[in-house]
Image (cartoon, rainbow, N blue to C red; front, side):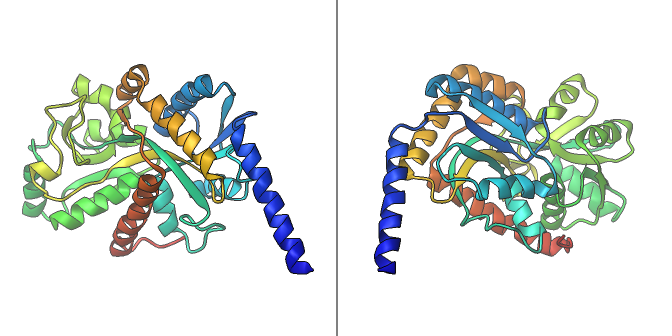
Length: 320
């Protein structure tokens, strides 16, 4: 009897979820963002959410829950009802956190259903104007000529920017002083004043200062040149083959969210990021709008977990 009872209960739940998926969405959708308001990730998701809300004819609100490496935000979504009304902004930072903490209250790959990417944004290799370096090859040569003399800044240890620096120094086989800062503004100021020789930072916030000549951008870290700076090469093509460190944002739902709901959300996201108006607005922020498939987004997340896990281990960054 118990087995029959459980089977009937499971059937009833499945039938209920199937019915609700058919009229999805029928109420407000909430997107949880594990970062503070005003940053690149926050601005990206707000712009995409606005487009989606217009198309889906339901309000979409963005709720910021920063802190603890994104764990608080992710855990709240992992435990939410899997009905498509509570979503999580995921990113390469989600992959990093999977490696930085000894124990998480969720499984990064099993407890979420990735939906789609929203966009990709480059990091840039920035150098102080007085440093006699114009290319990545010259930067590596400068470091090798004076081991330990080159200083490279990034935000806090374990961040994507910091790990991009760790990957760079490892692949280039150079001895450099890696200097951590609290935030992007401090990194950019230190690069401008010469407090540090170079930095690796998100391109978007640095764009105005690059264009005004406060410091030089000698490369971007992605596999392709950033369309907004076509004359700035990638690290891979200018002295360090196979190097790549790309930041990205995407959306995920709790695991067990009905596939029709995932498919609908994927369709809406891809339509939103394909809008010429939205693509142009995001490009101003240094973001290349690009959607994807659920499987592709899951593979991207899994690949980054493996990649940054190896970098963290090699750099001997202690887990929290």
